[in-house]
Length: 102
Image (tube, helix red, strand yellow):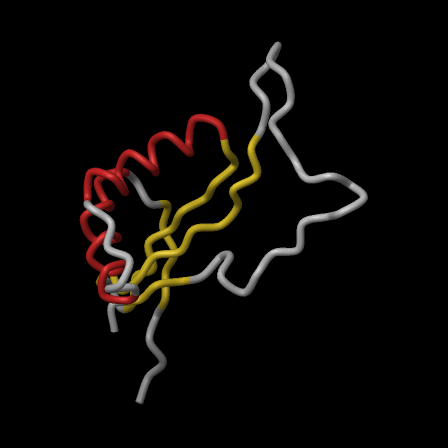
C-alpha cells in the first residue's frame, strides 16, 4: 500500500467553513460558528504571527493546523502585554494541535 501524500498549504478565510466543520467534529462540546471562526482568523492576522495551514491528503482537504500566536507590536505602539520573565509561560499540550476530519 503506498504512503499517502500530505501537503500543507496556507489557509485563507475561504477555508474557514472546512476548518469550522473539522473543529466541530473534533470538539463537539465547544462549537464555533463559522462567522466567529472567520472573524477570529482575520483579527488575529492583524496583530499576531499566526500561521494556519490546510492539510491535504492525496489531493483532498483532511485537516488544519494553526501555529504561532505571538502578538507583535505595530510600529509606534506600546508593546503587547506579555508574561513576567520571573514567571515564564509554559505552553500546555493543547497548543499547536492539528485537527483532522478522519
